[in-house]
Length: 316
Ligand SMILES: NC(=O)c1ccc[n+]([C@@H]2O[C@H](COP(=O)([O-])OP(=O)(O)OC[C@H]3O[C@@H](n4cnc5c(N)ncnc54)[C@H](O)[C@@H]3O)[C@@H](O)[C@H]2O)c1
Image 1 (cartoon, rainbow, N blue to C red):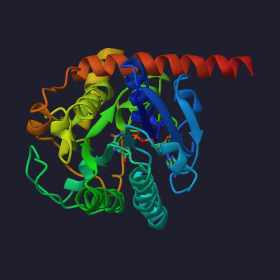
Image 2 (cartoon, rainbow, N blue to C red):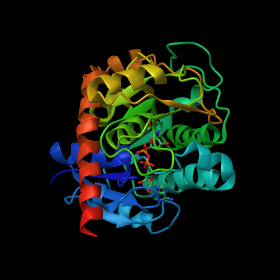
Image 3 (cartoon, rainbow, N blue to C red):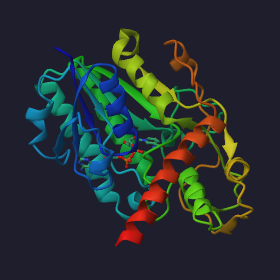
């Protein structure tokens, strides 16, 4: 029988793509999501789906006996976290603790926690290795709280916990419906609709972007390689691009002639991110999708969504 893997946040961006990866690899996938940000249409039909809040006791029987849990559910919008810090802590700290406790009681073998490069907000070493962190903002502090409990369960209960710190993940199923969508989805969508893209600040902030399939390739290695147990891994590409450079790359592909509109900077965003990926490479992993290929795939996905929503409006 195939191993049962639980994915929390399975209706979200990374979680929905992870669900497909695991299914294609022959695992059976159980998904948990309260659909507060994710959508049911993101979830592969083969996933055993449970619409539950990660803070609820009802997740315990769903998680019990699984081979592994990938814990991805959480509050991910920086702006929302600043506006609602108690809610951010409730989801990202208490929610994580409830998932950990369900995994411990349910004798789950492996636990993989989706942490963030925001842990490095106060660190100015680039590329940034996993060794030192300095979370500053509400989102970073709340994700750090969750990570600290993961380490506590690893050390106290001997759980096989792996922490992965994602840099800027992009690709299909990224939440393009948000008021302020993530940078690539935002540019592509506006430009496909014939609108000028918006850049917050000068556009000179530099980000390490990693395509979602590369992230999930590393997830599979971590699941299947005992050398990953107990360790922390950056997941990034190791190179970074400015927001202005991303605009030019998208424009090269779409050829719209639309110039960006520069708006007031958003609060709480790091100036530079760049991952040191030496640790992840030691597992035999390396990013395979370069930025141009990743953008082409993302454009194709968003084109299909824009076409579908125009068709719906026309039919309404
Ligand atoms: N996408 C990135 O670039 C990135 C970078 C760093 C870290 N991360 C982390 O990776 C994880 C996944 O990120 P994503 O981009 O897929 O985010 P996402 O917002 O697309 O997905 C998160 C999912 O969690 C669900 N959720 C929220 N609260 C919940 C609750 N109380 N109970 C059950 N489900 C709940 C949402 O409905 C959503 O489907 C998050 O933990 C995030 O902090 C993401």
